[in-house]
Amino acid sequence: VQLQASGGGLVQAGGSLRLSCAASGRTFSSSCMAWFRQAPGKEREFVAAISRGGGRTLYIDSVKGRFTISRDNAKNTVYLQMNSLTPEDTAVYYCAADTRAGPSVIRTTTTLYEYWGQGTLVTVSS
Image (tube, rainbow, N blue to C red):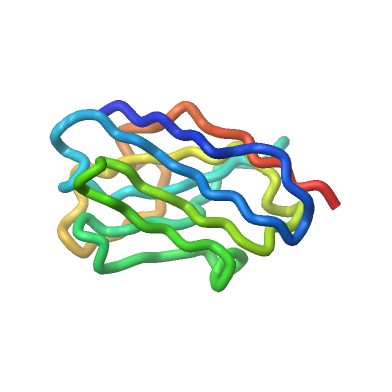
């Protein structure tokens, strides 16, 4: 699976961005898909994930109610709609695929995701 993330940019606090991650390969629809982020000087952290069929999602507390993850298996694409952005959301955002998770399983550990996109930078100004 090859992943290509896009949609990052510079936005003012309170603004919105929509990230996209296009996947190639036949395993997208059978993969749990996630977004992680890494801020300068910090470790990469889990942000959100969606199960294979899209029936289950998981978010870290700091983005609940502001971010929405979704997927379109027909387009092999996963999205992250980010609203009410704050400077604390500034980071490089990575999409990742976990091809070994069960149908309703979502895992949050970086090492369990086998495939990663190249990252897209989100900068939120105050």
